[in-house]
Length: 320
Image (cartoon, rainbow, N blue to C red; front, top):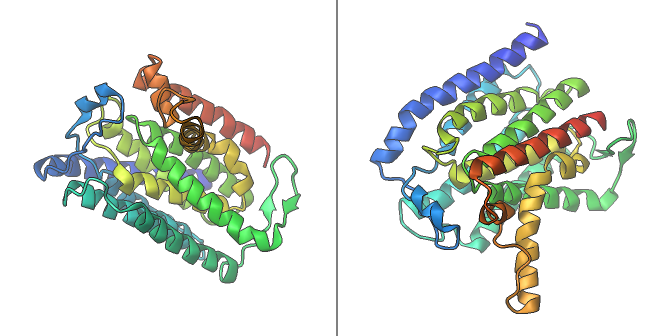
């Protein structure tokens, strides 16, 4: 099959499978009363979302997994990226299960969540360093053929990239369609980069593109289902896994700018609040809430954030 045929089939199959699963899963989540609990710390009008089914990330993770394995080439390295994606997805699922099913409002405790994330990250990096056969040198943006060798700092740096990206995506998932829209554009970047670099992981980002488009059928404003931590942590694992496997972590400040902006806004807000004993930089964080309180609609914010991501992904492609 030609590359165009494989691209079309992979994306279409994952889209169709997610859409079909959604037609069954969304009503099932309603019947099981797996509804989202909206905290008082968010914008007041988000209370209208109370009870909307969550854990919808299961539908696109199932499609992503099946299609990635089905369309992988012989010897293609999709399994490690799949491991990182599903590993973080499982952590998110446990967190959602505790919140929604067992009604433990905080889900996993922060130390539990961080410990599990550290284990998944360590296993992935151990495989990457010992068994993948992939160089740990990182491609430098806009300097073709130039690579950065960070030596003993490489593994700690990659761990920081993975954990930062995963939690950045998690913070981004606060508006209908936001995390999915931004990640689709990231997946387009990784698809083009993977094909251009001749790497065997291209089925993974193609499957993510299709499955997230299928998920958006149910997740665009007004959302009929949320992805929950099941989906957002998994997407963070996918983005960081692709960056590591393609040796593109230095490109993440561009393609993952929105994720970085979301998590930095929280860090800056909390730090400034403590230092000044009560003052704030933003009206509310993560930063998408700041724009909401400035009068922007959810659709406007998603459109602007997605447009910024699309432009930065194009710039990043020029920097390969």
